[in-house]
Image (cartoon, rainbow, N blue to C red; front, top):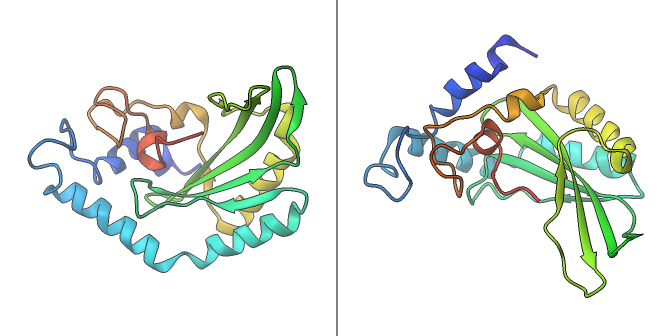
Length: 196
């Protein structure tokens, strides 16, 4: 990973897009240079609908025909990333219901970085979804699919995957979407705090 993509440099970077020590409901937040820069970056990414991103989705669909590949990017909202969900065949019958297994790819629009995580989502026997369990480290249930997504992302987009230590570095003076001041991490600011 490039030295400019270490936790300290990335914290500095997100300060270019979020005003410090202000909640989004406070005067000055939406008028700040940082917020205007963030909105312009989201707008630009939305308008160009990155050709490399579309190419990656095609590669994933071809390489993983048994999986459902979906583009869940919502740049017009509050996300700072392209988002793909790669759902494995299933659901799988487990104790208490049926489990949906998904590898999620987040590609930042603020830096040439990405992350992957696994979402295990249980639908109970009473037909209710429980809060999904999220894993940022390798899990056996999705390892093979995650390896393909990881390899194709690196090869197609020439971006770096952030290690967990960097992903979860605190950015305590930024309020990011639904994450309060004092609670934000780099993963929230570079990608999204809406992960499931």
